[in-house]
Image (cartoon, rainbow, N blue to C red; front, side):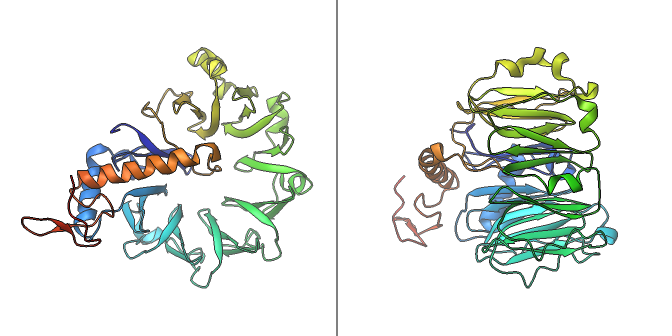
Length: 391
């Protein structure tokens, strides 16, 4: 199972990260901290991390900032790679003492959501975007360069950071299920399908608050916003909308942007692309190969193109600049960051993930049951659970 991928994660628009079955990490990004991350680097860091701990903990999640990369272990510790390029201006991101972290989002500052619903942050704080110490009962976080936003258990919203344009004016928001953050605005999607907006006035700010029955939203700065409705159709707004001549798409379950082109996934697992931006015209790339893809589960924007995950676990890419992520089989996937877990694969994931952890622990010569270190000369026993070494 060495080349099997356990998770694929997508962060910050131009970073694709995979955690492999043996605990190593592969990544592709313009982020310099990620660019130099390869098999040997990830194995080395995992080994170094294990040497300082009593037990081996399998990496389970990852996140990328502008110049930083974070790997989250199953016990909630964080391994950080990279640092802000201008520490004097943007501050120093320090996560070495973070514990019990279940989610990280990052830009020039990093925000960690803890298992108890509290939040920690470090890095660029000139606008108070790291002032999250008093937050509690948080279930989800997001951030831009200038602000940080959290959704609470009761579906109200808190925010901190630059509020010169009003993007932190979210105190009266209720029933929110998802937050989209931009440097100039905050968008909230409510459980009833309505949309909330806070921030600077732009080409779509007045339109989207009138939208109804919205399932998801994707944006391209303040030039274009696309809403996926609960009935599988799309709604558009923004300064680029009129120029793109978007066609009608139906029965969609997911949507992504490839530049100004709109990419939709229908309920039969087929990909549809609409728009006429010549910079991102896919007709000249891969001979429109995406039209032949079958059984696609979900898709993401990546580097002005898009990447799709098929039911058989294969990653498919359609990238105008012809860069591509390593093409590896993907038999066990539960989460594609930013998307809902695949319920149909839940049990397969749990079984596969446990097997991956066991194999990784054996590779690190530790207890396959709990990850503890062995002690003893003739009969080696786990120093944590007491079980004798059985392999």
